[in-house]
Every structure is written in C-alpha cells, then in structure tokens.
Length: 227
Image 1 (tube, helix red, strand yellow):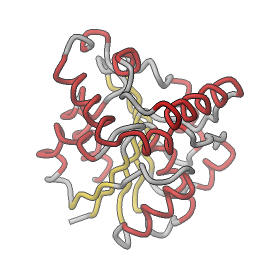
Image 2: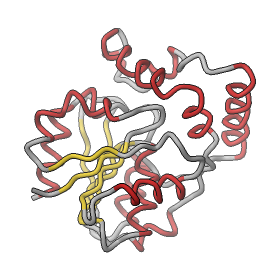
Image 3: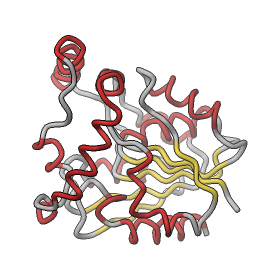
C-alpha cells in the first residue's frame, strides 16, 4: 500500500483527520507530521522529511500546505503526489506580519489561553458555527498544542511562494471550499495555475475546515488523486 503523509493546519494536530480515518485507512498507510516544534517552514519540512518514509504521497492542509510545498521542492524524488487543501502561496503583508509578531510576544509574556471563539467560528461554514462538538474539536487541538506550539507557528514568516510553483513536479491536486472565509478561490486558482498539470477541485457547502466538515468528500477526492 502507498504511504500517505498528512500535515495539519495552524494549531491542529493529527486529530484533525479523525472523522475521515475509516475512509483514509482504505487508501494507504497513514503518517502524520508534527508542525509544532519549529519556527520556520524550512525547519518544519526538514523535521518531517527526517521522520517520513522514503517515498510518500503528501497532503497539506492550510498552514500544512505551505510546509508541503517546501517538502515537494526540497525532496521531489520522495514525493509521489501532492494534495494542497484550503491553502495558499501568498505571503504575509506588513500589517499581518506585525500583528502576528505581537500575538507571539503576548503569548510568551502572558501565556496562551486558547484560540478565541471568533477565530474558531470564522473557520467554519456559517451553518456549522452552532455545532459545539465541532467547535470543541478545534479548540481541544489548540489546547493540546499549547503555548510553545502557538508561539512557534504564529511567529513563522510566510513569504510569497508563487515564483517557485513551476518547480513542483509531483502530480498535484488543489482543493478549495466554497464557504472558506480564510482562503479565497483566487488563492487556490493561483496554486493550480502555477503548478504544472495541477487540478483544482471545489467542495460546495463547506468552510475552511474541510477534514472535519466534509470528511467523506475529502476522502473521495483523495482517492481519485491517488488513482
């Protein structure tokens, strides 16, 4: 069976994929990367590669998509396929970078009190924002990761990566969700247009948190990608 490596988003861990596990386990041998211990995407990529199988298919969700692109560029001979879910190649603007640096400093000095309810709800389809079980899943992942992981991840400088997309050689699937308020269709299209041969798929009636909101549809898309 093929080895499939999954990279989660900001303040998410391997439990991000829990609702899809029964379907994913039919597709191959699953591996889950840890993106909580480093302060750059380059260092995250090196850590993941040091612990990964020799060859694998790679799935990056949201922030994990930034790391997945880095891995695909660093070790193209090891990445059989690439799937980029709800992600982007855009860098931080000046104001955004300043705000994130302020949040990192505040967490270091005052501690981490978990993700705000607003940030959690904005990641979901409007009709799912009353789903307290789903909200709880997201908050629990962030609580498990805690202060050190938050400071590491919020402090990463995100640089524009569009110029390097043409160097990605792995067959690539790009997925965007219609009600994703954190990433735009333009961002997904930029990825699909920039990576040679990439295919863009759109999931309807889903917010940013594709693995939790539409696990069966995600599995179906990944199954087609693996075939």
